Amino acid sequence: MLSSSHATDLLQQLERCGSPEILVVGDLILDQYIFGDAERLSPEAPVPVIRRREEKIQVGGAANVAVFLAALGARPILAGVCGADAQYDRLCELCQRAGVDTSAVVSLVDRPTSCKTRIVGLAQHRHQQQMLRLDDEVTDPVSDATVRHFEAMLVPLIARVAVICIEDYNKGLLDHRLCQFIIAEARKTGKVVLVDPALIKDYSRYRGAHAITPNRTEAELASGLKIDTPDREAPLLSTQLIHSHQFDSCILTLDRQGMYVQHKNQPGTYHPTRPRQVYDVTGAGDMVLAMLAMAVANGISWEHAVDLGNVAGGLEVERFGCVPIDRSEIVGELQAIIGLDHDKTPPLDKLLAMVAAARRSDKKIVFTNGVFDVLHAGHVSYLKFARQQGDMLIVGVNSDASVQALKGLNRPINPLEDRLAVLAGLEAVSYVISFSDATPESLIKAITPDVLVKGADYADKPVVGRQWVQDHGGRVVLAPFLPGRSSSATIKRAAGLTAQ
Image (cartoon, rainbow, N blue to C red):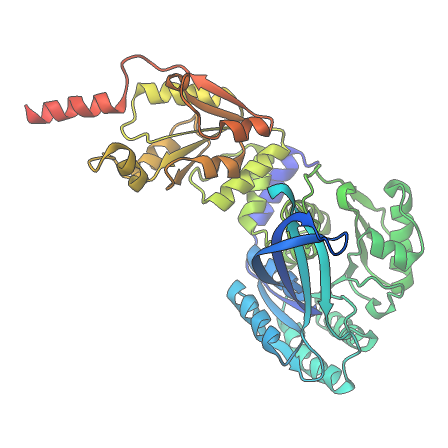
C-alpha cells in the first residue's frame, strides 16, 4: 500500500508526463460482448437461457494496449495483422476513434480478423457473468513474405518511437524471427522493449528484451516453478527467466499479491497492491503494460513505473471488460491517498472513479441533494451536518429544467452553473453533480452512498433512494433545519422589496 509521501512523488512524476510515441506490435483481436438476462434454464438441456438485451464491440489484444496508451495521453502506433474483412474495418475505426495510429495494421486475404464473442448473462439483475466464449480465428504462422514486409515497415517506426511493446497472444505473427528482429533493432537504436508474453513454455523468441511482464500463470509455465509463496519463489523464478533469456528485468504480476520486480544482478523488490473489489480481471495485464510503457517513455524509474502500473491495473479489475483508465483517474486515485482537493464538479464517470478511490481508503461516502437555488444559512448548516456523517460529501443538484418542473417556470432564480459554483466553494462539500431526472434515484444507485442525508421535514415522507442505500448496508439520516430559513421565503422578501 502506497504511503502519502510516495503517492505524492508518483503524482508529481505523472503530472510531468508528456505524450510520447509508443509502438505496439502484436496480435489484434476484436471483442464482441452479447449481454442478456439469465432468468431460467432451458427445458431442452440443463443450460441457462439468455434473453438478448444489448451488444458491445471493442478491441482486444495489442489493439487494447494501444487504446489504453491513448487514454493515458500517449501517441500509440499499432502494428499487426487482420483479415481483409469487415472486422478489420471495425477494429481500425475503433482504434482511430480512440487516438491510435493504425497505418501499420496490415490486412491479409488468407486469414480472418481474430474475433472473440462472449455471451454475458445478468443474473437476478445484479452481477454480469460471462457464460460462454466463441473464438473465430486462424493461428497458423504468417507467411515469410508478411514477416519481411513487417521487418521493413518496423525499422523507421522503431527509430522514431520512445518505447516498443510486444503483445503476444501466440496467434501466428510474433514468431522467433520477427521478435528477434524487433529486439535487435531496438537495441541498435537504444530503445526499450517491453514484452507481455504469450502463454507458452519457450521464451527464446523474446531473448534480449529489456523487460518481460508475465503474470503468475505464464511465469509458472515458462519456468517450471510453482509460485505458492511469492517471497520465496518469485526471486528464484525471475532470476531464472532473466539469466536463461538475457532479459534486463522481469516484472512479475501476482494479481492480488501485487508485483515483483527483478533486475539483472540486483536484489528484487516486492510491490504490494491495495485490496480491491475484483469485478473482472480482463484487461488488467494490458493496462499494466500500457502504464509501464508510458512511465518508462517519460523517464520514470522502473520502481516508480511499477507502482503506477499497480495503481492502473487495480483500477482496471474493478471494471467489467476492458475499460480504458485515463490519466485523470490515476491522478484521482493518488490524490485520494494523499488527501488532496481536486475539481469539485467532475463528470459522473470521473466522480465514480473518485468515489471508488475513496472507498479503497476506507472513507465513508455521504450523499444529499436539492435545488440550492438561493443559498442561505440554513443550507450551510445543513451541509455541515451532512459532511459530519462521513468523509466525502457529494451534493446532487437539480438541473434548471427539473427545477422548473418542480417549482414553476419562474424558478430557478440562479442558473445551474452558478448554483454548482457556489456549492463547490463550500468547505463542507467534496463534490457537486447535477441531475436532470425528476428524482436523484439513478444518481444514488450509481454512487451507492454509505449515508443518505435528507432534511427533518422528510420524517413522515418517503425518501428517494432509502431502500437502495439500506439494501447495500448504508443508512438514512435526517438533518435538523435552522428555523425560519428557506429559499422560498428569501425570494418572497426580495420580490416584496423590488415591488416597493
